[in-house]
Image 1 (cartoon, rainbow, N blue to C red):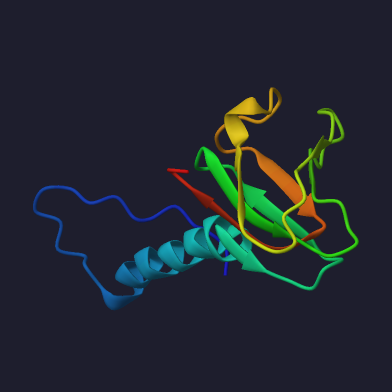
Image 2 (image 1 turned 30 degrees about the horizontal axis):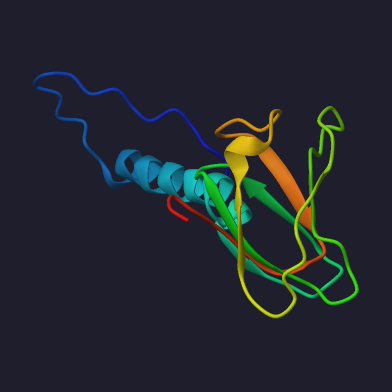
Length: 122
C-alpha cells in the first residue's frame, strides 16, 4: 500500500469514520516499510551479499567475511569506495564521520561483511 495524504480535521468536524481513520494506519505502515523495513540498522548476511543502509548514526560495527575485503560504497557512484579494516575474528568499529561523501540520511552499501550495525557510540 502506498502513502496517501491523510484527511484534514477541523473544529467541530463530525465526519470521523473507520475508513478515514484507516488512512492513518495505512500511512504508518507505508512509512515504516519505506524507512525501517528496507533499511534496518542491523543486518546479518551471507558473505558475498551487499547490504544497504541509510546513515543514521556515527559508528559502524561490523565483522568482515573471511577471504573478502569489507568495503563501504556510494551506490550513486559519486563517492570513493572506503576499504574497512579486516575483522574476521571479532567485531570492529568504524567512524562513519571519516567518510567525506557520507551524510546523515544518505544511502550507502557494504560488501564483504557477515554482520553490520550502526550505533551512536563506539
